[in-house]
Every structure is written in structure tokens, then in C-alpha cells.
Picture 1 (cartoon, helix red, strand yellow):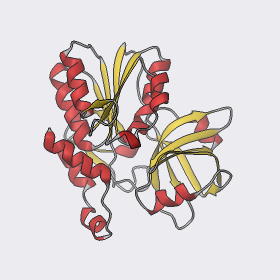
Picture 2 (cartoon, rainbow, N blue to C red):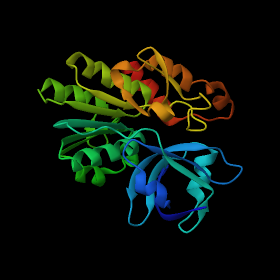
Picture 3 (cartoon, rainbow, N blue to C red):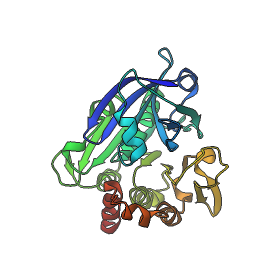
Picture 4 (cartoon, rainbow, N blue to C red):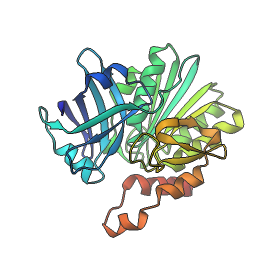
Length: 284
């Protein structure tokens, strides 16, 4: 059993937790993830490692409440326990050797982007961060990103906070202004990552994306997280979750992520992130 040592409500639908898991905390690095189960009847859900504290033996996770599993986790309080907390899984990010990087996060994807910004900042890389949200009410991790970056740009779809527009608009403005990045990391809805790559590829800027296909076991056995990378099948859980954005078949990823779309609709589930991603795709 794994004890929840800290809980913080970041906005009405996003929660940050620290979980006591010394072995995971000792080895977990930026880019890797864990899989949890609340209880023996719970589904296996992957979450990116948002931070670790080796001295306390805790691992931070940040998640959006989108289904039963995350709702049950969100209902847990400090001092309570969950059944499984397996990791670290996946390959850690390779972030050494870059001079100036731009880390881009969309919606709850900002939680996944945060550890990459921290790791780059600690390596002495100059870091710009662009984060995008639907509106002011759901902005998260602003102060944390300020501490892990040289420049932070907050974008909102409706202009209610920061700058008006999508993250891709800000990236395009910076590139047109002559800002010279040797690394871009984009994490968020698939259409957003695809749009970022469309901006960076013509300039040959190394671009990493973190993929989120359907995942079950996290060990490469089930094949559910299969993605097409440079025309070859890879498993996001063991070969990723980060990949070279230039090599990702985003159209295939989109189709796979929509495998259970009809079932989700039948259960009256409408993911706001998916709707936002569709809107972004239409505008780009």
C-alpha cells in the first residue's frame, strides 16, 4: 500500500498529490511515469512523474479528473492509501547539451511538461516556457514554472489571462522574432503537438513530444500503446513516452486515441481537452 502524504487542489478539476513510494522516488526521472490502482477493482492508469523527493521518499503526480479511476483517487485524502503505484516506467528524457529550450504545455499537459522544464533549468539551459489554458480559472503551476524558466508565457483561449491565443501562436511569434532554440518540447493534445512540429520542422529545431496512446500494462506486453514512429511500430510505454516529433505519425495516433470514442459518448463523457484539441486542429 502507498500512502498519500500531501494533496493540493490546483483547480476545480486538477489535483496534485505526493505519494510515499521510496523506490520510485529514488530512480524516477523527468519523462518517466507510473501506473496506479486505487484498489483491487480499480483500472490501471498511467500518470507522469511530476517530481520526486528522495529524502522523503515521495513522488508527485498531477492528474485531471476525467473518469472513475481518477475520481476515486481524487476522493482520497492525506494519510489514506492506494493499492498499486508502479514505476518508474518508460525512458527518461535526454536533456543534456542544449543551450536554449522552449517547453510547451497545453491544458493538463502542462503538468507533464513541468518536470522537463525543471530538469533543463537545473542543467543550466536557458528555458522559455509557453503554457496554454482555456481560461484564467484553470491556470495551474504558474509560480512553479516561473521558478523553472527564464521566460514564462501564459496563453488563454479567451484572453482572460496572460496573452490571447494558442501556444502555437506564441511559439510562431518568438520564432519569427528570431529567438534561436535548439530544443522544443511539446506536451498536450495531439493536434497541438502536431501544430508545434509543423512550426519547428521547417527550421530543423529538435522537437520532443510525449505521447499518450491507450495504455494498459506499461511493459510492452499488451500492445495497446502502439504508435508509428518513422514508419515503424513502437510502444509508448517502453520505447517512449517521448519521441522525436518529426518522426511521429500524428494521424495514426489520433485514430488510435479515438478507438473508444463511441463508447465514451454513450456514457455521456465529453472530454474538454479533446474538444479543445479539435478546436485547435480546425484553426490550424
